Amino acid sequence: MFDLFGDLGSSTLPRPDGTQLALLTAEPEHSRGEVLAVHGFTGAKEDYLFLLPELAAKGWTATALDLRGVHQSTSPGPFDLDTLAADLCALARHLGEPVHLVAHSFGGLSAQRAVIADPSAFASLTLIGSGPAGFAASSDLIPITIDRITMFAAELQGHTLEEAWDAKTAYENVDDMHPAMAAFLRERFVTGSHDAAVHNISDLINAGDVVDALAATGVPCHVMYGERDGTWNQATQNEMARRLHTHPIAIPEATHVPMLENVDATAEQLDRIFGQ
Image 1 (cartoon, rainbow, N blue to C red):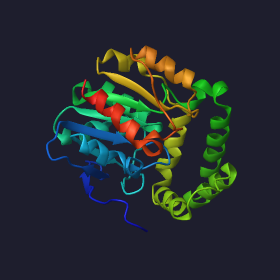
Image 2: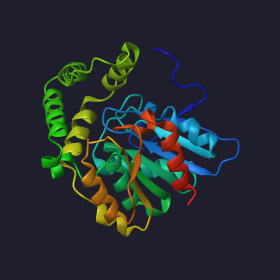
Image 3: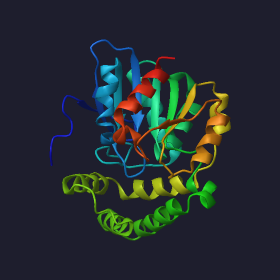
Image 4: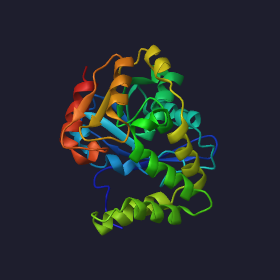
């Protein structure tokens, strides 16, 4: 459609079950360490399109992936959270040293499980706009989120990805986005796996809480969100931060995707975290 990649390097990582994980990487001149970025539901590696070069400018080798069954990562499945976590562990090991894991929204649920499964593979975990469990665990605090995600889950049953996406955008009355961007977001979602979308949205709603096990790993964890984000209630995220022995970081002038809405502030906070 148009060039989104600039100087980012594209590659793939094969998995034993036939999955091919699609990656984008920004390389600094002299690397201070590895960063791995994970997207949320309906997202993809391009959610980090602007953040990766900023992190590279600060000296970090920064990689983002499409989760299996999403956009350019092809996979026969399965698509459960433990399998997604195993992919992240394998990719961290492939990158060659303990990595700083950054995970947005739904991606945080798989990232938590990755750190629990293989703590020594990760130098830190930063959860951006994510939560301790699926939406159902705090449904009374997020009625708008529950309404929208329940509607989308129903549309995915018995409909194509194209039909479900179009119903979702009509329901949410998304009419202020540039047509080219709207077309790209639709295209990257509908090129994925229907089975992956159905499984991912079920886990997004119903995933259990593993925060205590995450805290017990000893891997430094951080909680970040846009100052106007309400997808997971901020009280829920603040309590998660307390359980992880950290203080939440609010990114100004941002809602649910601060790595796109306020790239500079997000990169500065992450650089501070990675350098600790």
